[in-house]
Length: 377
Image 1 (tube, one colour):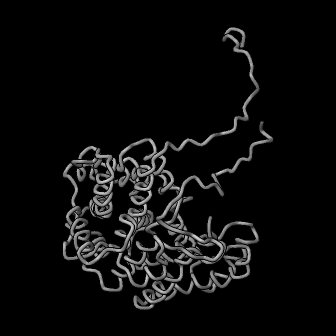
Image 2 (cartoon, one colour; image 1 turned 90 degrees about the vertical axis):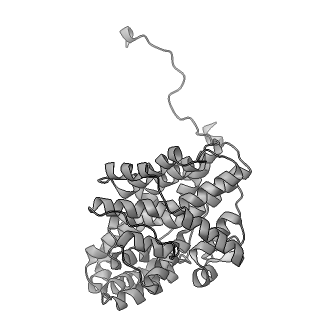
C-alpha cells in the first residue's frame, strides 16, 4: 500500500478546487485578479475598487463604488467591549490581539452568525473595514494613547495611516500604502486562504474563517518575510556590506530573505511596483541608504536567479514601513489589512460550492499489535 501511494507533502502541486479570484503563472511571472493584470490594477485602481472586484467579481461602476465605499466607511467601528479586550491584551503581539479581537467580534456583532451568501459578503466587508481599526487602536493603546477615531473623508489606506499616527498622510504615503494593500490582496491558495476555506468547509461563519486565516498568517513561514528582510537590512548596515553578506549566506547554504517564492520561478510581478516606491520614498525622506542596501543585495543575488531565486514582493515592503516609522511587529498585521478582501473572496467561493475539505494521511506507524495490560508492560 505504501509503495502505491504518492505523497505530496504540503499538498504541493495538488489542485483541490477551482477558483476565479486570481490566476498565477509562476513560470512567466504573471498575476491577475479576476482577469485583470496586477500591473494594470497597481497602476490605475484604488484599493476599494480592487476589494470590490474580488468580493463581487467585477470592477464597480461609479454608483457601485460609492455604495461600497460608504459601506466600508460605515463599518469603521468596534463595539466598546472590543476596545476593553484590546486594553486587556495590549502587551500581546499585534497578530494575537487582532485574532482575539476578530474572534470577539463574532460574539458581539449583530448578524455575525448569518451563513447565507449575503451574510458572508456583508460580514466580510465589515471585517475588511474593522481589521485596520483593531490594529491601529492596539498600537495607540499599547503606547499610552487613546485610539484615533476614523476619518470618513479619507479612503481605506489613508484612513489606516491616520488612525495609526493621528497625522494626515501625504499623497505619496497614502498611495504607497494603497499599493501595498492592492499587491497583497489575493494570491491563490496560499496557506491562510486555504486555512480559511477549510474552516468554511465545516459550515462555520466567516468570522471563524478569518480568525483561522489570521492565525495561519501569523506564522513566520507565511507572513514574516517583510519583517525578516528589515532585520537583514539592519544586519547588513551599509550598501558596501551587501555583497559580502550574500556571499557568506550562500557559502553557508542559508537562504537570503526576500528571494524565491513557492510559486514564482522568475521575479514576483508585484515586486517592481514596491521597488519604485521604496526608491522614491527613501530619497524623498533623506534616507537613500535603505534602498541602496536592498539593491546591493539584488545585485549580489543575480547569479542565483537561474535557480529561481528572484526577488519577491515582501523584499521591499519592510523598508516602506520602516521609513514611515511603523514598528516591525506591525508588518504582518499590515499584510492582513491588504489580504482581507482576498480571504473574503476565497470564503465566498467555498460557500458557493461547499464541501468538507478532508484529505488523507498515509499511516506509517507500527504494525498491528496486541494490547498489554499495565501490570505486564
